[in-house]
Image (cartoon, rainbow, N blue to C red; front, side, top):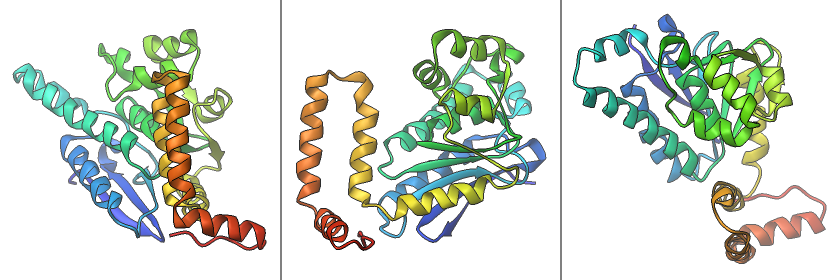
Length: 259
């Protein structure tokens, strides 16, 4: 069975499905390239207002394919470096993508799969799903931005326990820690993620793009710089047609219809 990244539409949401069920949806270079291409297409499409990333079957993603990693050990280091660069390109594309990206997690979410979920804006996970930074369990260190994400999301000691010890952690505990947003019944992660996207799709796309950009930049800039950026975004959005529609709808006590 060929590993691939499948794409289909659900209303105004693009659903990207990691499809490699024989290996618990392990990732590979073709998927990275397909993920970047799909988001580039979605960015310019007014028909797409949000994206869900999920896994086929009972698992989200088991991370890297160990057989491929073993084979790459026989190749020059540049081969693996190029593969990781493909993954990192996808991670950066998700972060910079101006529309909300939601991970819908069932079953195993390990290694680079965990990194991928952390790169998404929101995470919906089944109650029975299990997350693990599996790298140190096989003598490796993280990729996919795992250290960047966890060291910002968690206290140092907690993040390092996950990274150094490779401990498994459940969805409910990660929700308590503020890493994931919503826990749902097993088998319902995709449906719940799509319901969440329906809420997001009903909001002004330009405002959501501004919020995501401001949130991404906030940790690395001064308060003065962030205030300036907020001012610029606010003024631009106020003079967008969607603000006129949103204010009018609020005052008229009716649902807004954004474009």
